[in-house]
Length: 216
Image 1 (cartoon, helix red, strand yellow):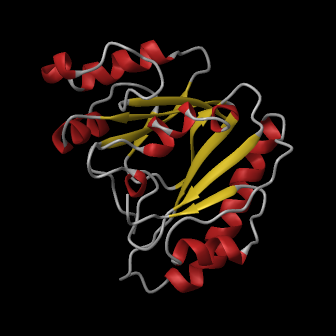
Image 2 (spheres, rainbow, N blue to C red; image 1 turned 90 degrees about the horizontal axis):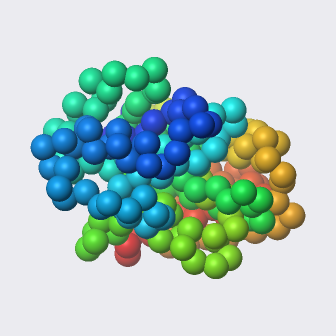
């Protein structure tokens, strides 16, 4: 089983001609009773949305004001786009026009590919809202990878090989759609966890694999 997010949805299948302003309009619609609390700026770091090219179209994230707003967006988004709250597989959060490095975050036990990276104090998702604002990551492609990491799932240990292969294939396929970055980095943050085992299983040395940092 996948751990669902509390207030954030992933939106897949967004056409390439849609921009951040239009995605923010959609986000405001799903939060229409609280629209005044939304930022007017669509710049990076507004803690509400992301929009990035992923293969043949775009993928976005929308952080809504409450779990109720999230559930309404999942049920009544009235678009052909694909909405979910489990963040299974790869999700591109940010991509520069010509990425020089690939960053792929892998969460640990009982984690979620989005909420495992949300700071408790200010609710910023640092991979989406902070990292792209800092050099050299403004020249990066930043991704997060999700998998079923529930402790009660007995199939987790046998699934590690499958997940790690999926991680390898997913990142490799994204690198083929745009110029492959010449920089290959493998770095770990935080405690050893299931995410670390998953990364080591396939020696995914082509990306920066960040393990869930409980201190966030």
